[in-house]
Length: 447
Image 1: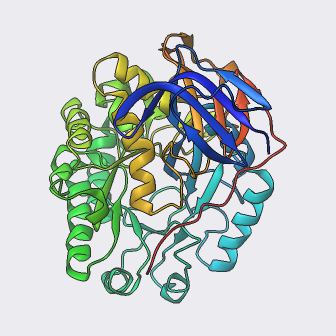
Image 2 (image 1 turned 30 degrees about the horizontal axis):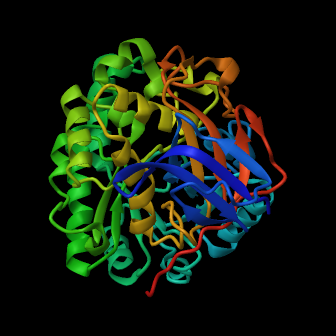
């Protein structure tokens, strides 16, 4: 592999920003900090005035392959991810067929080995009756098990109380949950149908998929995890009330119950439905400004541990349907880091917090082997950004296969210039070097 030298960068790592060089050799970070210009390099990148972060690790994406490749696939979405500074991702099981057996799981790994420009792992999906498959998961080679408590795209609802109890009591690998009370949602939907028929305005999405439905389901799984000592990770927290379910008194390494915030819940509010419509229809729903601000505060105060995207593309034709028919989800991987950097420019988050919550903590929480930090001996997953190179999102520069973004028309002040994945310079000022693919994530677990 090429030897890479990054010079004169502002290195954002482990709570500090230091000016220095980083030298990459044999796919690993060989040395970081200081003046390293005496080291021989095949590629030298001038980082003067720029900021070097550990590559982002996105613990929740939907890349739609196999079976839904008209809207996205592992190649196109990993390409959009690395252009956005994401060097590793964990992908969800609601594909076609649903990834609910270990055999189907390994088929996805084989696709990624051939096509993915970023490092990768895949969740095995839980159902009401596949406990035997869940118990076969190798914790050193698979990121975790996904449980849908609320019906969502590619319905994989686990709604049998006995099944949930057994999953939480018997599975040793990390369980990640989509937590919404489906019975509450259906009751809310019925009420709105009685009022509006099939023409429900999209602004009622957070009324149907309510804060109460989120809190009830999140509390239920938190209680289950406490009862059984389960390693639980609750995804995409969207309400102020949920934040308080999660402890911030312990270091992350000691937590058994953790939580995630997504970029869209940190950026948008229910006021944006008026202009964005179904383009910002997600599950769980984007809710009030108060909820949005509470999720950010919970993130900064360590009730919420990591930031992710829930990148979930659909075609524009699909999203342009009426509320009841438009699917939930949208593309975010390409724009997650620049959106977080925009929040930095707005004084809402520090650069070191971005590195902590979008890289360091994800590696710690999932116990990923030698990633998530700029440390000697760690895999060289790096992203270099210019904090003052403004650009505007439009359909011509969207890389996701679906060809649109909820951020269209948004000017971002910061831009990703270089992304290095496992020691390979894959993205360089808009140019992709695709000859080397990402690697399968490994996990240092003793389960």
